[in-house]
Length: 496
Image (cartoon, rainbow, N blue to C red; front, top):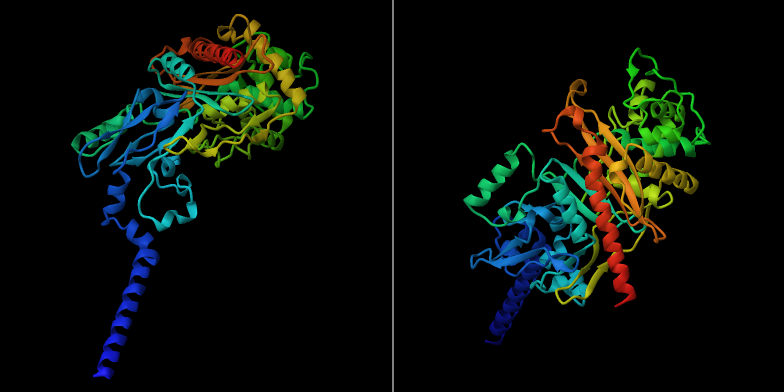
């Protein structure tokens, strides 16, 4: 009898060991595969079982959650969705996440191990902590002014704080309400089809993901390259750029919209946007020199994140001389995002250095404890400090006595550059209107904001479009809002 008991006990132990081995295999070895299996509904149900964390602007949430009582219990909601869609993106139970909703999803959904006191034990427990919050750098007054300034026209605005890299406003127009896509069902599917089929592409983030020919705003980059390379040593001295100017190796004449550009100085060329002078300077810097210079500003960088990915701004590195001349004035294949051109303005305003742009100041737990805090870092040294100081004055001259007069703000120092970018086959498309600039309060030690505005404005009459008329007033409104905001915060600091 005893041998039978021993054999039965051994068999039970063997079966118990097999069960333990199988449990380890399922719970640890196969867990990632099982979690990713489309037939497994548990991760999806767990994802929406609790409210999602919020995205905050100026300390107030611009997102929320609604209890539907369904299996996918909590559905994302958005306060003033179209205003903040280029920042938040959408969080959809059907179509996934985009922009900050995607980049910060681990914190917002509660799946980040950093939300618990002991991250190394996170995977040992299956319950999710409450979703954390994402505190953005966006300033509500600037975002609203930029959105209202575009007034539904196709275009975008990007505004950054030059000294820190904080993105203060990020607007894409026309926009859409992300809440239309939050749930499931026929209405959500119909909204998805309608938004994707819309000719104005409201779900396209034009500020981060669309590139445009920057036109004459790119002349700031060419001017910096020419000064850093020693091609120009005196900005007020006449250049040897003839008018008319034949594109090298061709019989094509490069026109000027402004008068008096023949052998004009760099200062005059920036003030009145002379194509011939800037194209000629780009050729003198050379293809290799221009490629190196634009790289310092961030062109051709496909890895930029803010933390949402930013489309690569392009400057061709292998160019014939005639195409180099066109590229140097922001035409041919030169293309840039509005954020990239805001970074160009910020480089001038910040003494040649570009602080890495960013949208998230910090992330927190649901209780407000800090999970991660942004640390300022340098993105590029775009130009030498003396070059930046000279360009600052040239951009101020362009506003105070040149083509950028519509961006002037009484009592403030404002620098800017207009641009009108041709596009389409044989340049028959309605030109894009650009303005880039920066603003500094009279009593401040450094500029408060750098901004880029592009207006596609396909309904406008071609001859009426210019950066000075269409884009500069929007930029002026954003810069004025930034100066007011800076003054308000300084007053609060001095009188808490």
